[in-house]
Image (cartoon, rainbow, N blue to C red; front, side, top):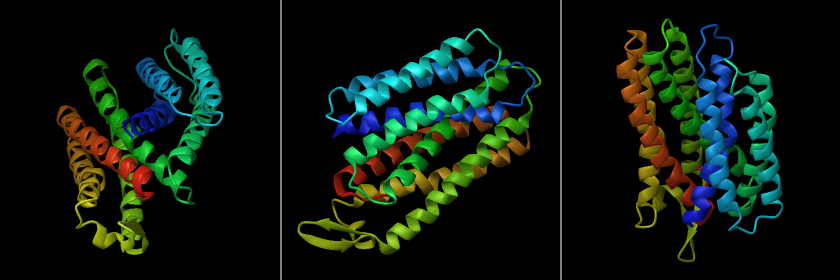
Length: 256
């Protein structure tokens, strides 16, 4: 189970994380943030590939290897440059998403919502970490416009609202098979097996929404250090919630 969780988390993160460079794509101030983003994505992808070798995923190793080869080539090409073309980033990320879909189909019970909801979780975690890293960049780069951090935080807010809506729909209409009985999700939350799912909703959706709102208020007064501190807490909260969400998806087929 732990191998499944780590593999899916690392591959999703490595595939999606570079896409957030679109937020800074038009910025004229030299940032060089792309080196850190691409390097971290590549490291996570390599770790995910190594874990994939322990799983019998059909064509998973091949797709993941091709994706990482392309990501490595893009990283090598743009490492000495001051900025990266966001359009080029799309190609390795699409291959990475393809590798993620193969893992999701292998690990999680098939369903219409499984892939988009898992990708949504990857977007929320990757976006939160990107915003936190971007907050640090304000300490190193002079005259970096506050709009970059504001846009990154607003994007996370939109993604979290989508997750909240989906959580409400799932709570109202999903059921789970436990001990031979089909139990409504609202009742399952109050069982011993379901108590951690309530924790996932709290730390993966509710608390992040509050933290993002506070971050936006802090960004409005241009206090980037305080905003970055809040984003640290956001990353930890989202990571905890996302891992528990994935556990219930793999173990019970619950897609939240």
